[in-house]
Length: 387
Ligand code: MG
Image 1 (cartoon, rainbow, N blue to C red):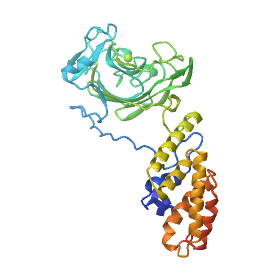
Image 2 (image 1 turned 135 degrees about the vertical axis):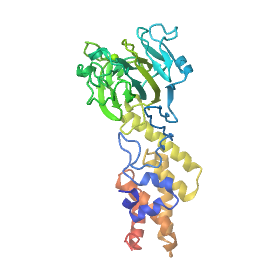
Image 3 (image 1 turned 120 degrees about the vertical axis):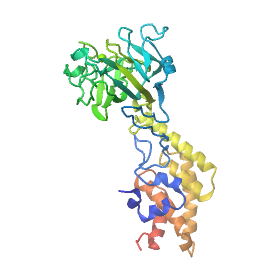
Image 4 (image 1 turned 60 degrees about the vertical axis):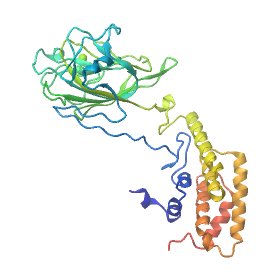
């Protein structure tokens, strides 16, 4: 349902009367103990603009989105963004060939110079078209987020192995929900959402999570991570650092990679991020900040616009001095309008202020004496009746 179809006549007048910003605080349900914004809050920051990229084809890698940090673009120089894992001072022995980053068996893991934490990662890989070996010995490599936890890379297109070591498994932790591989030699596309486990004072306050798509098919759905996971060992709670390099595994097979990029993710609520459900302390702080911003806007305005902004700020945080100021201002307006003989030309103004005051009363934010006077005025003029 469109928002516009939910608007009452009073609110739609408010909404389209040019006081769009002021209407932000008097529309949907107000902030509460864990949500600093109102529902449909126009004060809430807009999503950042990202120009989307393009999809890859078998022949050609796609383009990354505009805000992606590119880790491998297929150029010969891109190798300079990578280093040997064991001896980072040394250049890696992995090679760039035909636009792909290729594992040279026996050369060891490769890792990015870039270090990062929670991310959306895009990475494409291709197992050798010449099929050799079986189970874990065929086209094996791996994508290690922060160098800590492996999303398995393996040619098990037609090659069964233990489920928790299949392509797209969180290795040793959780099998993929499906085998969505293309044939060996073809490009496989992994899109991964990674969140590291968050520890505070030695205790895990939030698990890490891995979501993995392979060729557009969901393999891992927000799979919880306590620690790393590994060969033969059960995962244990383990603190991750804040950032780390992306590592690719040398498992003795010449697996190729292309089109590697990531986008950092915003902080979660447990790290102080501004997301939907926040801690009561963070919510209070955010509500105060929003109120302060609206009051600063109000200070640059005059008359009714100023008053509406001041009232709106009360939805986020009460300020006793401001409360006294708006009580006097609304009382003065209510008294003036009550005494006005020809009130019809003032209908828009009365309705707008009344809507704001009724909102504040309805949600028990603050009960201003003028709310009753204005409501009586609206009813006496039958402005509350649909025409
Ligand atoms: Mg592996």
